[in-house]
Image (tube, rainbow, N blue to C red; front, side, top):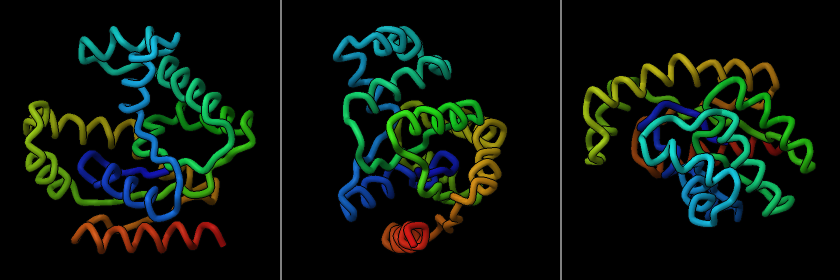
Length: 182
């Protein structure tokens, strides 16, 4: 899985990694859209939160993940930006175990806040205002950054410097993945 603040490049690096090693790149946003489109029980529950712009509660996020895991069976997966909270991480471990899977590597792509903020504002998305980006970084530090210790204690954490060119970061991510597999 790829961890890091908003703007760290998790989506970009997840897509590149998936191509390189033939694994399934999974973002919760994509899973939500698919679940809503397909009218799954979790998709129906998630839709109202998504439409209103609210965060989808952990229980619903995990239900979407469970539906996904049940639909794909056992395969290599790269989660991009998930889990986001300690509760999600602990529950994910239990879900993965039910499917005979576990977390092989949690790659933390670190970038300084100023760089993450710069990248978020360069994306040009309508919801990437400076105020929103600063808030998202604050939520990351509060809710998601503790997962660095969680996966470190589990022996699954690899730290990667996320600054520099995309290819340079990709090379660092690949080295971290290779080291986790040995």
